[in-house]
Image (cartoon, rainbow over all chains, first blue to last red; front, top):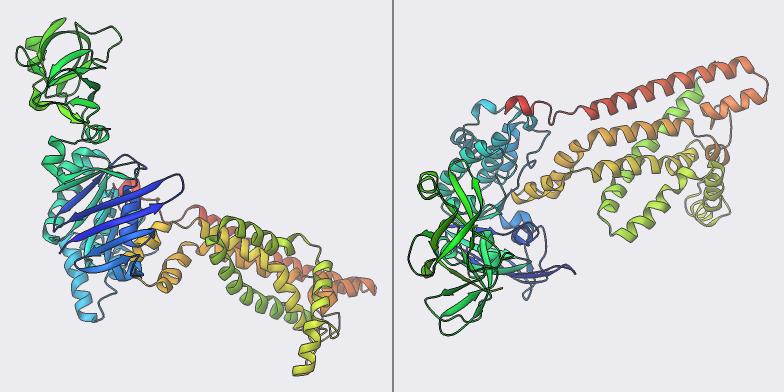
Length: 348
Length: 230
């Protein structure tokens, strides 16, 4: 039970090149809009045709440009779920679910499947409603139920929560996580929301401009996103250009400070440090910095700091901490340190 | 009053509307998907009958279907049937004239269709035929119905091309519009006025139907109760 994708598609100004594998797990394609993640999903579903490549699900070849295999979307059995508006507006909830069950030829088994899925998604009471009479969350639940009753080999979720309000979104996300757990097969989730990706997925593929930047287990990718865009997408807000001095010493050009890394710099062009990895007081890479701005968030403070040795034009470093911590430390200048193990080394 | 022209007009309009319903939808569906350049060219060619004077359409049809012309001569030789000057000859004229109306409204309706519906339907295994008849057509229902009614109305009123290809033979090829002209020409003003009233009544009903369809289109089921349900 697995997914293996290796595809290329040339759209003139945009070139998609994606290769990755997934086991029975939730794999997230994380990237900014227009990076090619949705296009990749459409290629797997058979809506778009790649120029070259191979797509295999559970040992079944869906697409192979060399062997001339290109199954129709119907034959692929990939449950594709969109942001919204994918329910058939002229059918009730029950009719929508029944449409999903049409692959099952045996009428009795079909009705049983429909009843089961209606029950388990809590849709029984909504059976007679039209999609326009449902909330966004209910619509997405019906959409997912309709996909599952069709017996998909794999689930493809294209930003399934992004059209919802944040409180609805959180609740639906929890529900969907349980459903995916029960589904127990490969799920590909496309998203630009790093929090959602972190909560939902086991492994992550980061895409930027049609290329795969970083791929690996969720924790590895967040610990070491490896590229600049990977760092940005996983939520790292402090990024500086870097050049090598002697040994493991480097100059962070945008921050205007010299830092000591654990190992020599190789081909990395940037350094990054997450806002909550900045440490107060003495330690490795410690320096005094002046507070340029203090931003209060609902549950934390973000303090922008400019190292005293740096020029006026240098980029300040953001430090995010709990409210109590800053209330205790609050001053015009503070001493902070950037622990080498927390510094991200990033390629272009 | 001889009701033949009414009967004849209705059957000509009815038959040509049925033909154009399928042909127009077929053309609209495939042309909506065509590459841009081809789409532009076909669009112009297929819309041409809408702006051409009906007499020009009639002339062109006679050039093709007349008993001494390419198609007309061939049909006459092979089947022994004349394509002109019968009651059903008018169907050639009306289909050509009403085609753009059906084609354009249907294409507009298809272009407003949300393709993600078709993609989701394919991914849950629904056949393309099912998607077309059970999802795409219901979604575009109002636009297509409005186009059909409009095409029917235009077919009822067709005069120029019809009079050229089917002529005016009382009791055989006479339609309402050709009858009105003929009666007025022969100074039977009273009778002509009665047919005018008949024509007005039919047009009134048809336009009322179009308006009602368009109004329904503006307040469809989707979206109406969404906020409340949230």
